[in-house]
Length: 333
Ligand code: TXA
Ligand code: MG
Image (cartoon, rainbow, N blue to C red):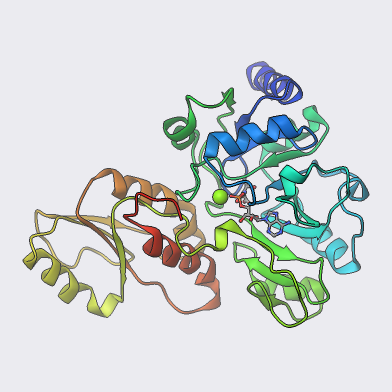
């Protein structure tokens, strides 16, 4: 670590100890962090994001953390998953320890825990030597930030410091697995797939909030239909229909921005065509930067080529369908 990076980390850790809010990079997206055991500091995170109080935050921990300080119970399946995927883009939902303030867990009996894999996040957690409660560093309902510049533009005037760790390697939020119930369930798909989880867990994994064996459905704000949304209206169009759809929209007099995996199909001065990478990891890496860039063009409509139905595309398909659902709305979901 350079002495400059090291002094930035020390400053960020000191701000966290003083109850301030610091944005920091993780391998998934940038987080907006506060001392997880300081309710007044965590309240500042909710205020900066305009986030409703009943949406729980993930507590980020250093690799060597004692999980029993945060979770009442760590079932064997959770231990297996933590061993296999931490540090990494996996959040485990576990029964919470009572000392965790209610504001962190949105009043629930569980807590989301994650050990991030980004050198600056790891150094910050080591220097702070505690849990950092952090949602993604964006206004509620909007697109998660994958560069420090995204955070600066949206929250720069509201927070004490932004640690700049460059673009995030993964680009979409962590896979969330609820291991607090009898059957483990994926609450939010991510780069770590259900297949990866099942291979390690050795048991079948459910998808979605679950029903039947549970009385309480956990609240996952990332599961609201209108999350991750640009302000420009956004539609998903199958590759085979792209040409007809674009011609029809042009005939309506619309200016268009297209995110496609194929080369530009329809050439017209009113179309801005952005080519996406054709593999799921590359697509995820660039997705939010693309959405922000296309939104900034202030066209009438963003048209996105629908993605393959295969499991490897599930996480980005999930983000795109939510973006399509919430786009263009001035109201938060
Ligand atoms: O990759 C990530 O997970 C990023 C980075 C910064 O770590 N964080 C992130 O945080 O995406 P956020 O707050 O934007 O999304 C966390 C999701 C929310 O949808 C929240 O409802 C859910 O995790 N969550 C947190 N605690 C929970 C709990 N106890 N039960 C169910 N869902 C929970
Ligand atoms: Mg978020």
